[in-house]
Image (cartoon, rainbow, N blue to C red; front, side, top):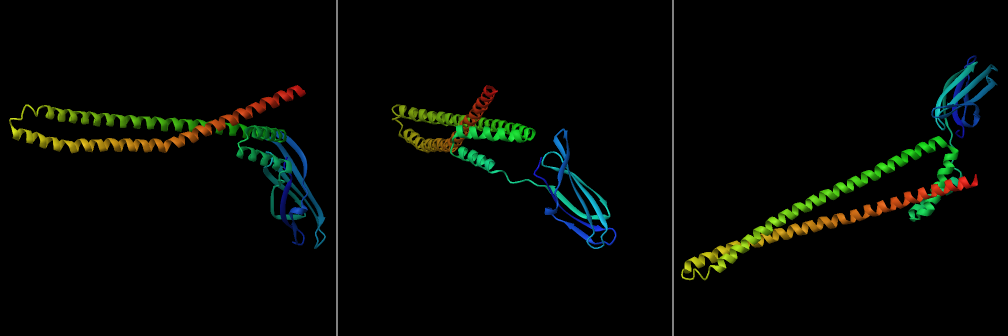
Length: 282
């Protein structure tokens, strides 16, 4: 159940029309009845006014009703009046600030995870969960299930994204390898052509013009070989940059997976320890 119903109301006397006001501090709702429904307990709160009009003495009777369902949610309100007419009303659920021990538990939980003290975090988490479950079993169970489901889905999505990125990088590297092999074969062919020209010099020394022509062709081919070497070097440099760019991302993802796995294992271990301890105490 909540910490109470709060509200304000304005009504007028049906005899003289004088206005009356009820403020938050005037209401003192009492929980009259409760029943179990699908989403928990439904509680009926009531507050009754029985007074005389301050202007004409007319007898005024009003019964305010508010239903809380599920716990912590104002579902509906109703007013039964006699001798007056409700002009305006507004009601809501009052939630008291968390107790000091709950704040201390929350601070302890946050501090332990910031300091990477997983054992202390697991212990604080289990204590906080048990207290919350004892206070509100159904909402705690639902929130825990949804949180666990979201954590599993997030972990699965992170793993899928990491594997997809890794596959793309491997395919990209394979593409660079193919380009490198093609350029290497071109360079080898050009080198073979240069060697062929050199080996034939002795056979065509009788014709100076032919030798000069071959030398000219060689000088024309050398810039091509140099240009291809520059392309190969540029490809390797770009590939190195891409690998360096992604290596830290993979390391952080691996570190995050390791931290999350350690945290989950510690929490499970503490749950098992708490369950065994409870069975021994029984």
